[in-house]
Image (cartoon, rainbow, N blue to C red; front, side, top):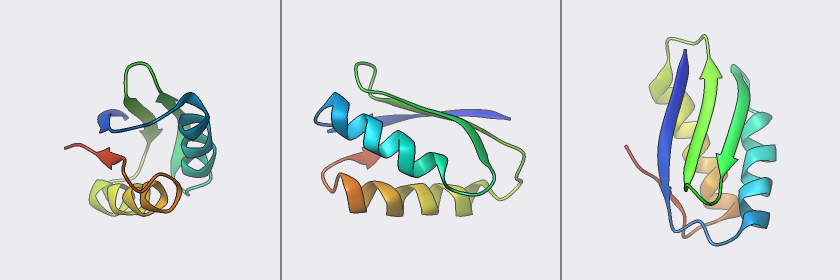
Length: 72
């Protein structure tokens, strides 16, 4: 399934690239894309445990770009 989430306060394209690379390493995710201009995160997953995946993504974001937030 394909999922998309808005991001807030993503500061620069370099930060977006770092987030995309780090989130891509999470298990159960594929085709991860972070679009700086649209402030959007998209990915594909076959997992039924979306809550755990979102929790892991939020942890990655807080380490790389603390001011950035994943919006529900």
